[in-house]
View 1: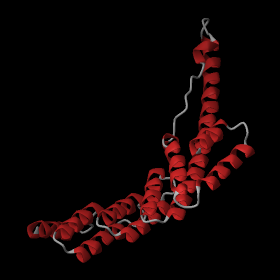
View 2: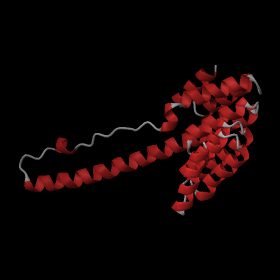
View 3: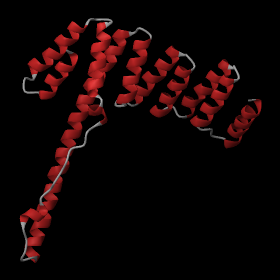
Length: 219
């Protein structure tokens, strides 16, 4: 291990601008040697070297979690989520870790926030998709007019737009999020309060099929 440490220390010294990956690897070597304080100090340099990168904070949280530094890992995940609120998978993992240390209220709060952010993001993507379709139809009409001018065999059907919708990362595990809320609620605030929340959503939007599906999952 000492030779490995010397190798990474020399590599970092020579590079001038060490990467977060180099600090991460060196920190793991220190940890394997039992030098935990040195490992933590080295891992802290990961985020110091790239303080605006949410992925670095996410990796920093993981190495801390792997070593049992739960509170520090949670703080790093919070920072990662501040930098990238729409990292839905990380927020889901953050909620699970909070539940693992009996912070159920905070965990459920994160899952509700995940649903809110995810729904908002899905609506934004839907609006963007509609705008793109309108623009493409507009271009199709322009091409159609040109074809009509230059071809005796023009047919409007040649210029129809066939679009599709893309499923978002949020939609892929929405059911898992709602199921996790219900499961955590059973061990804390009680599932009845969660049921009432989702009933209220159905009452607000009776025609919302997705809201009805969500309520069935909670039951």
